Amino acid sequence: MAEMWINMGPQHPMTHGLWNLRVKVDGEVIVDAMPEIGYLHRGMEKIFENKNYTQIGPITDRLCYGSSITWNHLYCMTVENLIGVEVPERAKYIRVMAIEIQRIASHMMWLAAYAADIGLLAGFVLAMRDREIMVDLLQMLSGSRLTYNYSRIGGVAADLPPEFERDCLRAIDFFEKRIEEHETLYRDSKIFLMRSEGLGILSREDAINLGVTGPTLRASNVKYDVRKHNSYEVYDEMDFEVQCHSDCDVYGRYVVRMNEMRESCNIVRQALKKMPKGPVRVKTPMYAPEGDAIGRVEDPRGEGIMYVIGDGTDKPYRLKVRSPLFVTLSAAKKMLVGYKVADVVSIMGSIDVCMGETDK
Amino acid sequence: MQGKSDLRGEETEVTVTRRVVAGIESRIGRELSAKMGGDISDLKIGRGMVRLRTERPSLLKLCRLLRDAMEFDHLSLLSAVDWDDRFEVVYHIFSYTNCCTMEVKVSVPKDDPRIDSVTPLWEGANWHEREAYDMMGIVFTNHPDPRRILLPQEYEYFPLRKDFKMDLE
Image 1 (cartoon, rainbow over the protein chains, first blue to last red):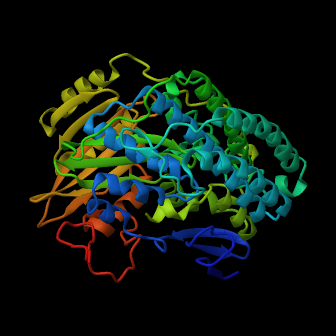
Image 2: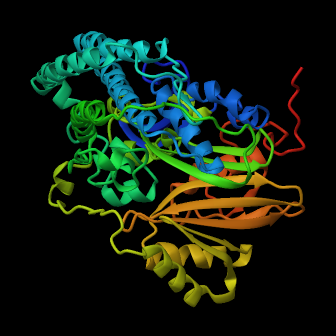
Image 3: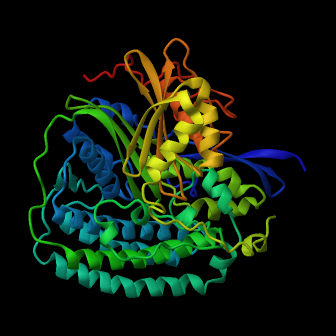
């Protein structure tokens, strides 16, 4: 049969944001794939060079609307590395706790979107409902519901509100039981298993060579997590397991994310328990010295890196963002070739696409 | 179609331990100076990080050595920087085996902004290099797909260069 190119996107229910996946099909089988991105490009890196360090903070929130605290925190941590500031101990614990709450919210949003992708609309509604619990916690912390701007260079914006600890523990206990319920919904669904098992296989060697990171890498049987092996803030004092899976397929990615949410619940509890009293923010200079610094975190979608170069003024000379999805998307061809065109939605949904950070 | 059973037998894991050997950074630094000699300069050893500088002709030799003999298997980040007198490409290469990051800086002259592509070694560099071309106009020779990535193909400028001014009014 004649081969032809099909455009899936930029306006397509699969794409979750604006991007275009061109697939070349021979009958129903995919023989080539070419993702095209850039529809959401806002010139972030150029904007960074024209704003001072304080003004950049809120902009970094907009890198990813699904996990804004992580990016905001990564930016603050990188600049702290450049200036050489030590953040107060209490602020480190608050940051760890906030990032983990954000990770749960982000994974829940993935679960909702993915359930809708594969036609399990009950899963979408239920996952969005339970994500609300985490968003409410973050609203208590920061006052907003999507772009929080909670980290500051030198600490966090504000201390925990009164009663936060009680509400947070209550919410986490409630949520942990809910994860079980969600799992029942998926594990017992024949549709879900048919559309996830054995699809989008990315072998360990390919995953490493293609630079894939995060849950997708761990589902390809690589036991690596920045929080554990290249620890930042106070993650080295937290007791948690790195989740990985040996199936290398879409189902493995689902399992890794579900288990990661459980670990996140544990980390939030430990952080609240070990949190010392004290200040949450130190004063930092407006001007950064000459030199460069790098910050590396485990974003819900993979390894997020910022590389900053200071030139002695109050503006960065260069601030480079490494977005995990930017690299993971480039592996699309490897994951798609050989499968049927009907599987594209399931496979591309499994990597948790976020165009805000990809297009910058 | 690929079957799931193809990979089932492969149960081994890449086990990663933080800091397998104490002082792994200085060991890597010594090994590099022995093998690369005068091709590398400014060797600095930090916590979990080795920083060095090399020249364009020896970049591929260094990268092959890093990937094949020293287990640096993950190209994390590739950044291009526009300095007053030169461009600079900065590679951050990570090793899943010993959790060490290698920072390699290479200068690229402004009148001949060309450098060898490392995509044949690490496929993860593919889109990073396309982005560096898109934003900074650095040409990566032997790149499999040297097109713009974020901006339209017919766009004429390289917006992250310092002489491209933003209209802030």
